[in-house]
Each structure stands twice: as structure tokens, then as C-alpha cells.
Length: 382
Image (cartoon, rainbow, N blue to C red; front, top):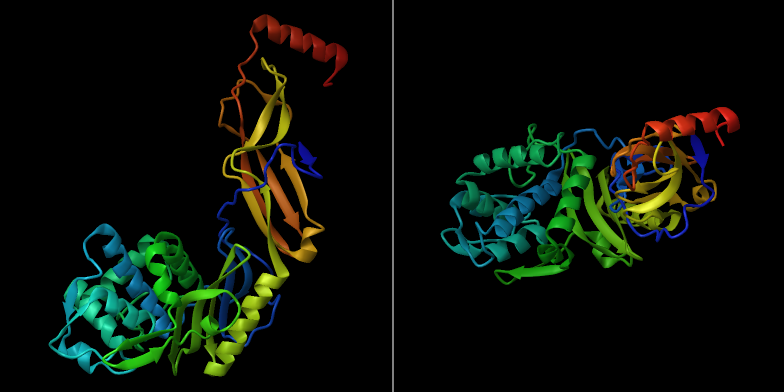
């Protein structure tokens, strides 16, 4: 049975959301100068813009987000504290590229090192953390790759902690989005480091390279990257009106292009799309007929709720339907999946979620079944 719902059942509060990874809008919905791009709504996981999101690419300093994630996990587990001091090796001190300017044979607090990585993009700070946590940068890179696999980043591989050019260092935009989402949701007590606009160490003040932190788009993180091979990249997140978007862009030709393109795409995502809560967690969507049951109907419940992200134009053409075999034969167990809710709109893939029986329905006894069968023969399905 397919039942079109012009509106959902009365009493539904329309509040909850579910994570729907990989529900994309058509590639090319917006043109971008970035070589690779991905823009998602964090609450629903809906992709608003995709351009080669699963293509391995040199991430440059955006891979430092994984280094930071590894440190955050150890802080959470109690294996490390912000006040712990780690030694600066000659390798870290000599490291080229962007630097925090730590001094060889000194010790630096973990919190300062984190700010050196996040705000100043310090390669030297990354090596101090890697050596302090794993003994060598190589061992730390192996641990990064293993942990990435464990959290679903299946197309990432690390050869170092800094993002320094290496043929064995790659990530995809989708993996960076997964990583950014984990940091935002799991480490709110540390995420504020990403919104700091400057940090001073060794009397050297450096500004955060994330251009969106200095624009009115609600940005609060995360990390830029740049090498000759990678081009200019940015993994960023912003919040407007309670909605959070995560964006990954890479392969741009200049800092200016990165700044302008990232601001344009982030603003487009907030302007053109909206989240539409449809069903609260555990909300009743409909009532389904029951065959040979002690109750004539059973409530159809959405266990996780549903929120969809749609363009404002597509919202007016959204269709919601309940699909199930009718009538549903008894016995029915509470929580048993008996139907599905399907939401479709022009320009986006249909979203389906399971619907469960909101109550148990026992099967009629023998005489009850005979009476129901006789009633069916006389009066029909009604």
C-alpha cells in the first residue's frame, strides 16, 4: 500500500533529526573554481554541493585536523592533559614551512602546541605532538591512518603529521567532512581553539589563515591548507540560525580565490537550503490496518525521527508517502519494522526511513479469525 500524506499525523511535534550521509543534490548545482568540493548540512548529512568528493587529493595542512583529533582523543581519555609538557627535538625545530617557532631542547605545554597547530599551522608543533605521543612522527602517522579507518575515513592515508608533500599522504573531501563532524560533535570543549583569530608564541604574533573567520558568515573553524601540488584548500564550518554547514574546498589558485570562493559557497548553502523537521523521534506518522488482529489498526512510528534538507524551491513540491503491505497480518510485535516513510522532491534523491509498529497486536483466536473471515466474505475489505 502506498499512502500519500499531504501532511503528517496530528500531534507530531516536528523536532528531531537523523543523520543521512550521502543524500546529494545534483553535482553541478553550483559551479565552483575549486578542483574538489563538498558542502554538507551536519544535522541531516545531506550533500548540498559535490565535485569529486571521493577523489583522493593532497590535503596539505588540512591533514593537521587529523593530528589534532588524535590529541583530542587522548585528552578525553585522560592519557594526556593540556598542562603536560612535551620536548622539542632537533627534527621539530628544523622543520620548514609554516612554524610555531618552538626552540630545540625546550618543553612546550600541550595546549600551546595545539594552538600552534590550529591557529599558526605550525609544522614544528605537529612534530612535537607526534613524537610526544608515539615516539616518532612515522609511528604517529601509522596510528593516524589506522584510526582514520576506524572512524570511517576509508580513503585517507598519512605519511606524516603535518601535511608536508608526500605521495603517500592523501585524503578525500568526504573524509575531511567526516573528521570535521567528529571534532565538532565530540569535542565541544576544545573546538573553540579553531575560532581563535591569532596566537602569539616566542613573541611572534600570527593570525589564523582561515579567511572565513574574518567574514560575517558564522564561521568558527577549521583549517586551511596549501602546497604547490594541492593548491589552496580550506575545511570550514559555520553556523547560522541553528544550522551548521561543513565545507571542504581544494585546488584553488590563490589565497584570494580561496577567500572569495569559500565565502560565496557558504553563503549560498545557507541562503538556498533549509532544514524541514517532519517527524519527531518516536512520533506517530499514520495508522495501518491490521489483518486478523485483536486491534483493527496499529500506529506507525518513526523511531529516529526525520528532518530533511531541501532547497526552498523544492520544498513546495515535496511529497511524503507511507509504503506498506496492507493489511498488516497479526501478530505484530512492538518495534517491528512494518512500513517505510518516503520523502521525495525535485532535484534530490528520495529519503526513506523505516517505520515501526508503535504497539503490539496479538492475533485473534480461532473463533475470532473465523468471524473476521466471514465478515470479509460478506462485507469485503472495508
